[in-house]
Length: 220
Image 1: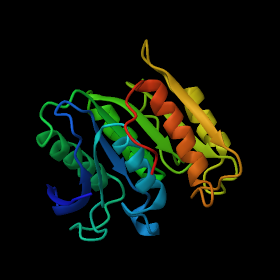
Image 2 (image 1 turned 90 degrees about the vertical axis):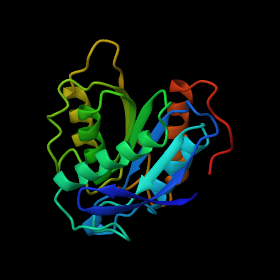
Image 3 (image 1 turned 90 degrees about the horizontal axis):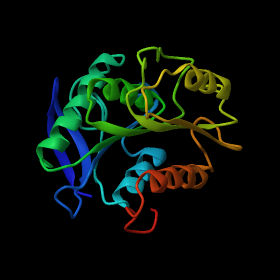
Image 4 (image 1 turned 120 degrees about the horizontal axis):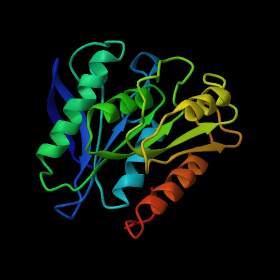
């Protein structure tokens, strides 16, 4: 899990990157929760999402948004963080010029950023949005949603009610051939405290369905 530093709009960004063995392996970029509420790339959910993709043969990057850890800059209420996410994808593509596809996974605030990046980058063919803050941020830009993916939520989430995510999924306009799935983890709060394994089982099952034969190792 080598440490990497790559350029962002406001200076260097700090990340962890695991290259795949195959030159044409797909890329995954993992986005962490809100920087002002303790979100970092080492969040347990982010860490485990990272390895869900590593174990399926992806080249995977997780990183700290501006102002977090050793990443330069300061919090920018989403606009700058979207720029950071785009810079992360640019860097991952630059070191994987033969990559055949790309996925985005985000947790909470990171899910909001990830879905915005998805709208701007047509090469993103799949997404995982964990605890998407559908009641706190505007997701109306997903019209239509250009890629198939999964929304996962806990039914004990006191930050974002399950109903808010369900309403978002119902409202999503999708293009032909695009399938949006929603899964609920029983007993899980917004942070999936004590429920990370159950969350990863849901994510892993979804990835195995979308990526048959891709699993290369046991789950982290």
